[in-house]
Amino acid sequence: RSLGQNFLHDGNQLRRIAAAAELSPSDSILEIGPGLGPLTELLLAGSRQVTAVEVDARLVAALKERFPDRPGFELLHADALAWLRDSPRDWSRTKLVANLPYSVGSPILVELALAPQPPERMVVTLQWEVIQRLMAKPGGEHYGLLSLLVGIQFTAGPHFKIPRDCFFPAPDVDSACLTLIRRPLPLLPAAQIPTFVRVVKQAFSQRRKMMRKLLGSVWPTAAVDAAMAAAGIPLDARAET
Image (cartoon, helix red, strand yellow):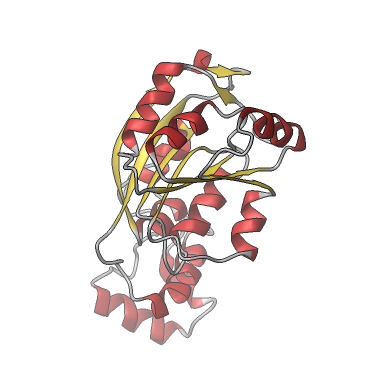
């Protein structure tokens, strides 16, 4: 549980995830948390290259036994979040397809979504609560930081729920698989994204307080007022709206 390990073993659900990835023989796939490799098997069958990142040494050993010298298969024994931060790459021709570790799924998604060259598609299985945040619209109870940080580069596509008994051990929460599709153009130029991240983190630090007061503790109030007016945002607006 400390590693967020809930292994998806249901063949029908695994095939639905692989189908959502819309695999082609030229695809390069990133899989984080391959576990014992049932999804990996499907990804290898439908793509050119699969890079799998697994933190658990016991599972790395099992994967090496299952896929010995398999062409197109790269297995890395690493903490995926640390590896993504320490080894920046051009992911623009890659698809993420993964039953993400629930304990670090959100930060992994944000790391990839904010990468200079993010993946073209991300098909991820996560807690239903997190999936709701990724699909949330302004004003909804699930709308927040995750909605915004991933939404700069991605739009939420189809999703489907996965019953708890399809996992071992069965998680204590509901789960779902969501397809995220990279926008043709990001909502912001790359140079503005660091400031945007800072603004929304400050604005959502207390989501029900007026944004103007929260931002005014970081930037001059006059500059905040001018920016909000230019954006057509009422001065009494709260981040959640």
